Picture 1: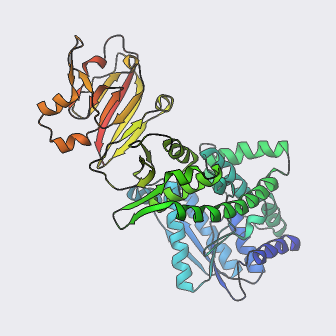
Picture 2: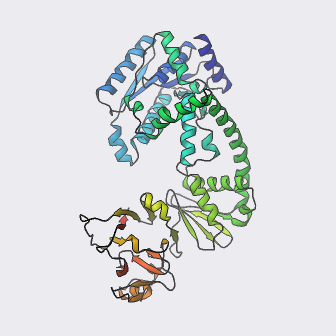
Picture 3: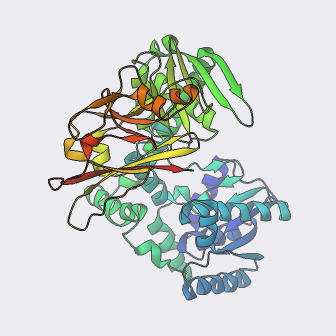
Length: 465
C-alpha cells in the first residue's frame, strides 16, 4: 500500500500539484477512483474538502451514492458539501447533452467550493485507463496531435493525481484497505461510445499487449511535448500570417496571407488553421481534422469559394487571403458542396444567417405522405444525376417549371415574385450544376417530383433558428 501512495506522492511532486498547507477540493462520486483519491490525499496529509453531486438521474441508486459519500466522509473526518441538480432538465435548458451538462455543473460546484474554502486546487480522479480511453476516443473523432496527448495532469486549478496509476491498481489498493465503493450502473452499459472503448476496445488491446495502457500513456506524454513545440512555432507563424483581424462582442474575423501559409510545412499549416478557427470560435472543442482539411483544400480553390465550419463560422477565399469569420457578408455569395456519401449516411445541416437548411434521405413506400408547404420539399433522389450544392444564385441558373421540361431563368423567377435585388444576392438555392432544384421558399423544380417509380426521397427543409 505504501508503494502505491508513494507513487502518487511522487507524481504530485513531479507536477507541483500541491504545496504545503494547500487546501484541496476533491470531487467525490463514490466510485473506486474518487474514493481512492480522497483516501490517498488524506493519508498524505492534504487538507481535503469533498464535494458530491447528485445528478438525480438514477433514482434510488443516486441517493445511495450520496449516502455512501456522507458515511465515508464522516469516517475520514473530511468536510463534505452535497449538491442536487436535475441534470436532464438542466441539459435541455442549456441545449447540450446530459454528459456535457453534468460536467459543466460539476466543475461549477467544485469552483464554488474552491473559492468558498480558499482552496488552491480541485482534485479529480481520472486515472491512467481514463487517459488511454480518451486518447482512443479522440483518435476516432479525428483529433490532431493535441487530442493524442489526452488528459493533462494539471490544467489551471484542476489536478489529477491518479493519472499515474491504472484502474486495477486502484481497486487492489482499496481491497487491501477493506474499503468498499459504489459502481455506477451506467458505466457498465455498452450503449455509450466511451463505454465501448472501456469494455471492448481497451480489453482487446490488453489481450494483444498487457502493457498497452502504459504505452498509450507514454505516447500521450510524447504527443503533448511535441504539441507544445509545434504550437509554439505555429503561434509565431500565425501572427506573421495575419493581415487583418476584427474581434468584438458581435464580430470575430481573421484574414490570413494564403500564400504565406501554403509555403509552410504541412504540420505547421494544419496547426495554424486549427488555431485560427479556434481563435475566431473562442474554443477548440468540436474542431476536428476534417474541418482543418476542408480549409486546406479550400486554399486551392478560386476566389469566392467557401466552406462551413463549426459555431457558425465560414472560411472563404478572397484573392490572396484566407478569411475565417463569423461576420455576415451581405454582399458576398456562398457555395457549399454536399458530399453524397455523407448525405446518404445521415442528416446534412447548413446554418445560414438566422436559419438553417436540413437535408436527409429516406425510402419511399406506400405510407409516404407528400409534404406541401413553402419551406419543406421532397425530391426524387434517383432523378438527381449530378453533385448537389447549396449556394447563392449564379449567372445562367434556370429551373424546370412544368412536366414538359420547359424552363425559366432564375433571375426571371425573382422578378416575377418581386424579390428585392439585394436579397437575391444571398438567396439560398439547392442546385445541380446550373439547374435549380429548389429556390428556398420560392420555387420548386417540376423535374424532381415524387412519382410511383420513386425509391428514395431527398427531404429539404428550411427552418428558422
